[in-house]
Image 1 (cartoon, helix red, strand yellow):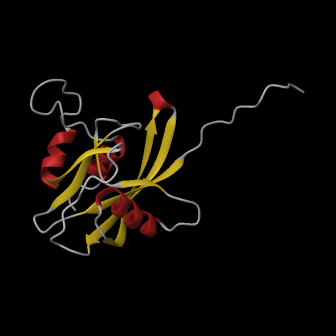
Image 2 (spheres, one colour; image 1 turned 60 degrees about the vertical axis):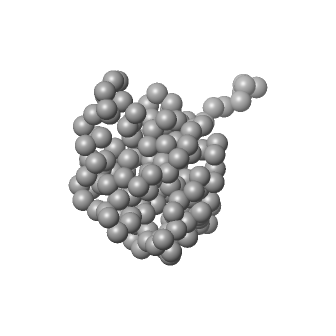
Length: 158
């Protein structure tokens, strides 16, 4: 037997993302900071905690990150997201949510994780996907987090 510690193979983690829309068909999107995907745009969300339902996770993460109280309504889709360059693998559950207070706006509550929150129309996001490789021009600052790319490819309309 070797005295060296054994290294476990990486295993998939479960991420939950909240899709929060307004009356104009826009969704809340923020620019990530600090972790993998830094600088890319993503929905509010995070890791599913042990014993937590994915609805509860979507509601909790949205409140923690944006200050918005939401009600999870339905599981929209699931994506398989492999970040080869980082050795990370996520299964991401996308949950449709509704704001409790339609007039309240998102706030940046975790400044180390998110630069800002914006309302962006779904059709605009679809145009971003086609330009993910652009390094200059109008789409150079519109990089989407990998699960977002997969979501938009799977779900053309919300």
